[in-house]
Image 1: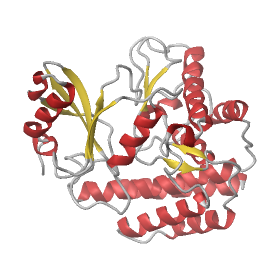
Image 2 (image 1 turned 135 degrees about the horizontal axis):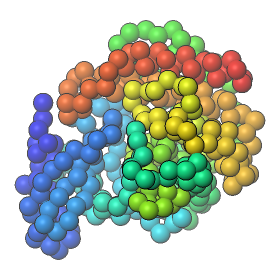
Image 3 (image 1 turned 30 degrees about the vertical axis):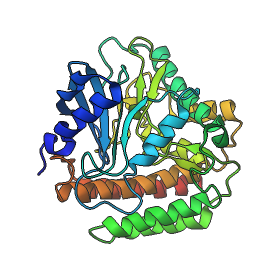
Image 4 (image 1 turned 60 degrees about the horizontal axis):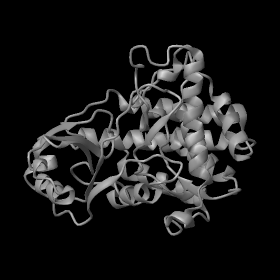
Length: 344
């Protein structure tokens, strides 16, 4: 198992930061893993000059097209100065000279990452929690209103045939990472392939938009300070982002997931319908085919969970373990089929 210092190589990263920021105090680095990363690994680098955040792929073999550090850095650079807040990219290594794999370093943005519990005295009232949800939706709507060409991302993806290609991609990822057959997931994928709607519009999509992939202002829960984790971003159907957010947005009485927080089950948070309707008002989107996108989110995350399980079993997640992920994959798949049965 790699140590934190082996994963980050401060003896090389420190001098590179010192040169990029013109400050020799960056040569002395302490390294801490930031909790929450299940795919790319995220570290805080602390020096006498301050703190920054480094992102790199996991160790070991990775699936094709996964963990592309260059895409993450590119989209964050492109969105700087837009209505979508992102951390400033400080240093990017596309060749692997620093760590043996591509990586990048970005500024550390001050704010709360809300995962399993709210900070003390933060958003105590239902109005505050609704405002938090509305801020999240509004940033997503702002992202989907940006013209990709205007920020240099006109070639960032292939919008035509996006959903069909996504289904093929995640089916391929399942085939590459599965440890056993799961007929229910095969059924879910087949039903989705038969029901894929034509996209009404194409935008920049985040690919994994959720509450804990955003930094909230420490004093104002109605303000998003930064959107993080752009690993899956591309150009495509924005409804896929909305479906993914609704998958993550758990409601009271629903099972607690193993890999993602479920704070929104707590009293005072609005339900998924509130989020969907606000998004529709902000963007003009039609919600008639929303069930497809919610079910696709279940399919996609079931495959992601299987990938996490495979990497954890191989020791490529820096010692992190996540419980019975086989059971989690089955549960998510069953929920996805239920979405299609209930609303399809």
